[in-house]
Length: 165
Image 1 (cartoon, rainbow, N blue to C red):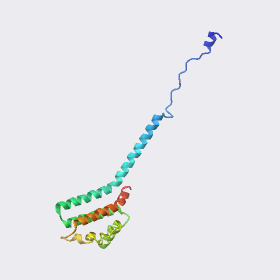
Image 2 (image 1 turned 180 degrees about the vertical axis):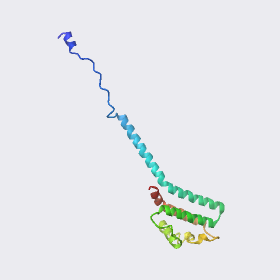
Image 3 (image 1 turned 45 degrees about the vertical axis):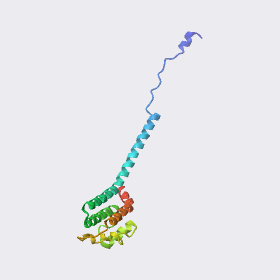
Image 4 (image 1 turned 60 degrees about the vertical axis):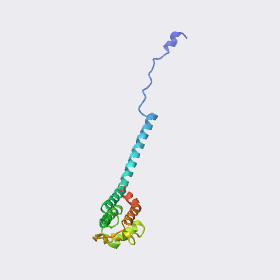
């Protein structure tokens, strides 16, 4: 074959096809999965934070009551504040139970049932039955506060459960 015949068989240079946007390159897949993982992590952390807010609020309010008692040293004010606090936290933690109208012995029995001990009916918590309405009270403030702290520890799962709704 002659050179001219060989040259006639040559074709023009063809440029390659442009790469399409699909399927994505490997780096883009990593980025997509990273963004999805980051969004799921943020969603989970936010949900967890929201679930813990009722517990944090109850703990902060109890600390505020303790601080106020340190300033005033008033037993009747401490008992009254703790009674209101117990009722508020109970109403939030146990919405399915009719506890808003509980008073006296029934209220103490509910608190004992929810705490798993008898510190309210037989211990320092007995004051929450009706004694908080007296002007002069002699209470063991340390024992009463400890009883409420222990109750909050036991009720903690209920508060978190309600916070997740």
